[in-house]
Image (tube, rainbow, N blue to C red):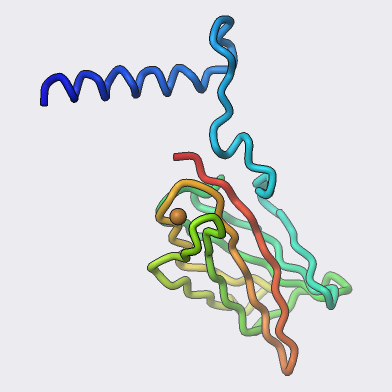
Length: 154
Ligand SMILES: [Cu+2]
């Protein structure tokens, strides 16, 4: 046990050291996320348009950027003219396409009733790696989706 613990410690230090970009000797090894081409670059206000011209923006994220575990978001829904849309039926589903699984915990989306804002409690992302987070908006007979993609480092 003692030896295994020591080896693990050495391996961990080596892995952490490999993340440094200023190491003149070892080539910089990309983490999974650094090499991930599908992911959005996280920023507050990141906005995804839907076919109708409606758009959903991520206007608040705690923590920011998203992390493995619990995330608490506020989304803002606007129409094609940019006007806020309150009271739509909005749902959010995280999925890991590389693993074929979602999150064990359901996200609840609640309209704040003001400025097109919806709180999401919570977006639970149990694993590091690439996640697709699909936002589904239903109003009347129309249902459409917007998708965020975030990669979480381990
Ligand atoms: Cu997974």
